[in-house]
View (cartoon, rainbow, N blue to C red):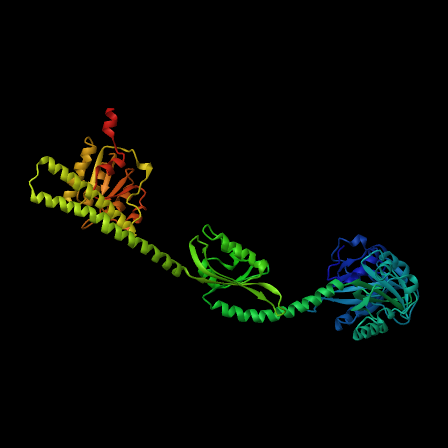
Length: 611
């Protein structure tokens, strides 16, 4: 049966010894606990499952009066225990009775919630109550059964404070013998070791002959210092006379040292917290990224500027090695090696390096890493500062690229374009001065065509150097080799439509070609014949509804046939924007030529059927 209230160490020993009557009731007198001795000798075992058994019901009329008076006195002063002798208990009668010490059991708010009874059978009639209390020690012979615990030191003192018994644990711990321990004044063991105020308190507790608990220092024969937690319990004989003490000692040296160390650490932490609060306030308003690591490069703190700079939260980086935050595909391995080795060399680092944000975006930073030392000049970590130098690096790179581009642009304009342009001028001047025959015209036109192709190619390259475009085509192999029944040309320029029609018929004479100069008409045609296999060429720039409008509306229709953008625009924005339409297979620039058309690998559905 489990004791239902808060259980201290002394009461636990008394319960385990099972040498006294111990039971408790709630505030209404219902018995809610009794130990084995009470259950057997008072015949309470049969009531073990009854929760409403009242103690007063087990007493005779005389004992009931004594019981009620005792309970009343306990409630009048809950801090003072009361003594009562009971002769009857159920069907049992005791010759001299059982003397009980009755104590009030209180909750955390000191309100009474029950009563504790600790009793001992009397062997003679007494005129005055025995000075018995809940801490009465056990008789010597019975105590031996509790001495097997090797972790507890137990002394037994007589009323003159001389040691009359010690357990084996004391002999082993102090490397002593019975001759050195027994019959000796107990306090002499601590006279030289204990602090004066502690020794005086110990002596006073023993002289008061009351239960006590204190911490005191001692030492072994090998001069090893010990801190002991000692609990003293006064002993009385069967007649109620004081005969000495039982002392329980536990080695708390580790706990005491830890507490002392904890106190020093707490004082140091208090100082550090004050300094840290100052630093944190300054770091929080800084636009520089600041990180702190421990002695093995693990990040322990960072300010909000690091989050703003790199996208990492404090939770993301805590405990990570600092170089893990700065590694990336294009990060210099030499830079990473320097960061790793800094913990060994404890050196200051200052360099510009490329790293990556949490999103994967590249970032150039100025990296400064300084070792931190405490007030004893002991190394305790690193202080890292990150400065964003992205704009500086981009500017340097852009300037270098612009210089190269300008040189290339100058060469294209002054050599490639100029060379072909002068050739065209020379041909036209020749035609003006002479009246060449058909063969000469054909030859001159052939030369002009070659020159215009070279000029066109140079213009494309020049455009690339200006960074308006990086490519003039969006090639998707999934849309090649399509079999089609008609080709749609959507362009508001009639002359361009006629020339494109001529080029298409040259390559695909058996494919029907439909020309639309209005976006709405083209859409209406597609919607009216959704099953027709077709290839669509569309210009982007229209006076009213643009080619972009056509693409948006065509997307809503959900047709499977691909679209080719055929435009004069070389804007990189147009090229990139067109990539959002999955049905666009190519981005071609005007004018359309036979080579471009052949690259589309269009196959006629009717020609395939005839084959």
